[in-house]
Length: 205
Ligand code: GAR
Image 1 (spheres, rainbow, N blue to C red):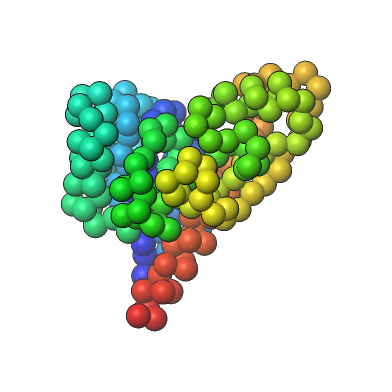
Image 2: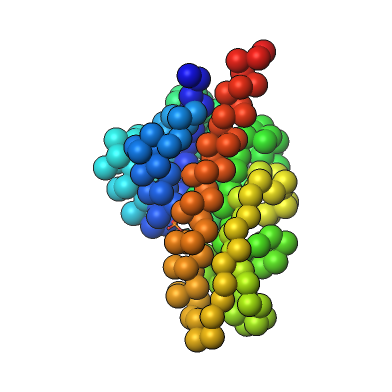
């Protein structure tokens, strides 16, 4: 069976990366070869998770590299070295330029912790998303997996899952519920769906 060489981009704790690692180890992602982890932060715990799983992991830090162009050149160099075909943004908090997203058109997917088009776009990341949902008083939120294009959180939607909000929720409580009930299931499942489709396209060429 053809497996799609996949890189996961991270910036922080990496619980979504862990969900993908666990599902792959359980044999539930038959079309995915987890081949590389790239972090935008040097000390990200996600890198430790990658190492424990035996996946090569590197940090590419924009501040150190000096510019967006140098940052993206470093990412591309690693992606090419590892012959990566598909990229997963799993809590990756750097914005990618149009040059980058065009180069990997329909080959980058992202998880966002709301039901797009609510609470998304520039400035909506991590806990800020859940703070905004609670401030607006919505009763349902969730998570979305989508293809990445030049518009932040603007690419085609692949899958969504709704999660209830309860009285007394804090941003932290809500973030955990959205991760547990939606993100950690939706991202690995969507990744397998996209990889399977890419693999079948390759075989038919
Ligand atoms: C996740 O909730 C993810 O959806 C969110 O950051 C968190 C990363 O957690 N991503 C965004 O807000 C992107 N706009 P993790 O490092 O534990 O996977």
